[in-house]
Image (cartoon, rainbow, N blue to C red; front, side):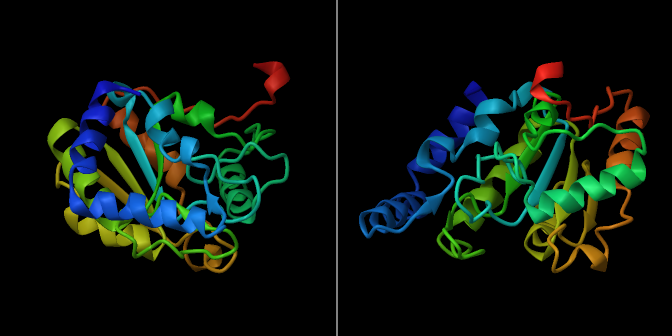
Length: 223
């Protein structure tokens, strides 16, 4: 993990709210509750996205709540079966880039290009979406955005869904913001489809003379 992320997490770990999150999650596990993602994958977004490369931050709601799906990156999964939200993301991508290859559900290639895939909650109980929305992750995310406000010169924030949209008020004016409904089957037809966010991201990057994101996801064999 980059030293910048480590510095931020170490600062948070000294605060009461963060200790409450850790205590809550530990107790839930002791009570035989299944929590996703696994503890070792909880901060994968930080582990896998080099801080100096971050130029896009995509926020969803919370991790996948079904068996083996959540991998610590918002919307990504190592499973071969495509979750419904990710299927809708792919549908939107194909409408924007007709020749795109999307043969893999692992979004790590985006992360490696500087796309930080975050959720407004970093944990969830199995089968219970939004179940950890009020355990303190909102404070963690609020503080992380304040950290980015100070540390980064420019970012594109992509806010999908009502939980993510609430973050707009704390994002610094120097950053670009794109927002729409969540790609979930319950809300994708309310503004996610047709938002053209993937093309808009690259248009903004081009305007800033920054390298575009290659949204292709090729099979492991072709890497």
